[in-house]
Amino acid sequence: MSDSSPIVMEAIGVVRAERDEAVDDYWGGTEARIELRDDIEPDALQGIEDFSHVEVLFYFDRVDPAKIVRGARHPRNNRDWPAVGIFAQRGKGRPNLIGSTIATVLGREGRVLRVGELDAIDGTPVLDIKPVIQEFLPRGGIRQPSWVSELMQSYWARQS
Image (cartoon, rainbow, N blue to C red; front, side, top):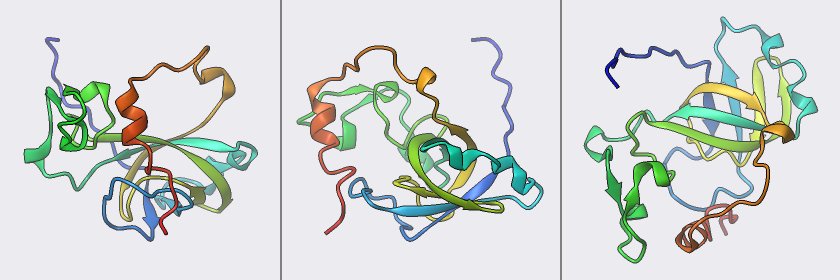
């Protein structure tokens, strides 16, 4: 690609959550709030409560630049799993530091959207919120390597 002009974005809001540390597992049952910026009208969320889920795009703002991967690595640095390219995994140390999660809509009040099981920590900048629409989900079955299921075994479990 010849054009590497920077893309400038501003966060639309921020995550408010109890968790303030990026831990890999036990996101099940967590709740968070997405607080929109003051210059975004509250009606930007109008109708969002009619959807069961939203996709939240956010910025991994606390990743150490030295930990950004531009090639392959072992997921979670676990040598029992194969080294795969950063774009074949969902690790936070990615070139553009963009995270994406489908979260459950719990409600909204003004500029605040309450969500369940958003794996973003307190203070995380939110880039966008999109409703999950059935017609945009995969058409057909999902295929993934077996190591992914092993990696995700405790990810959405509730912390005891």
